Image (cartoon, rainbow, N blue to C red):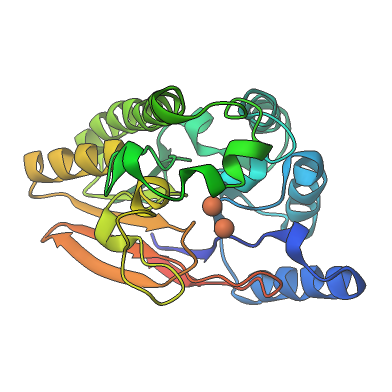
Length: 273
Ligand SMILES: [Fe+2]
Ligand SMILES: [Fe+2]
């Protein structure tokens, strides 16, 4: 049995120019359908807090097939992580096609391949860490209610906790997946490795990597991949809007999707056997 998946990330529906928003969203939906997928992977930064439910509803209705998703930092803007996660959990349980991966566990895709995922978060541990010169400039730390008003060590311990939460989920899901499946697809928003977190065509920068990559999930993925050399792990990420595709280990490949505000696109299709 084989399966075709379409992958999109950082579609940022909120950043579509107002006068063309409907047409551009429709084009994205047409492109996703035209790829003829059995299911769609959405790598986060789908919308923003107040519009997330509407956008997910349109995606579900128009695509009319499974939509497996994780959320990005923008999905909690002008809201809270607690609120959008509660929404994602509720949709996972009540909607026909929407499945938020942190709440959906291990998804068997074929006899060989399973899907797992978590949002992840820039957990402040790579690069210059708490000494990062840009930490005070990030919209995340103003627009996501759990992070507002935090600075310095208080902020970074919150970021670290978010990374740890993602890694904890992935540890359980991967442990379960490798028992039965030779290949595991891991969908996440934040790249798990600093070297994968390029930005605007530039190589990773030590001031930005604390916020552009998630070390907790990276360390976990490396550990699991090393412990299971006969399994293949393919990570699909977004967040930095800059394409990257490399093998971190012989059995651990990381792809980061490119993205541009106002021009959402399909990253590609994956044929899964
Ligand atoms: Fe994004
Ligand atoms: Fe993001």
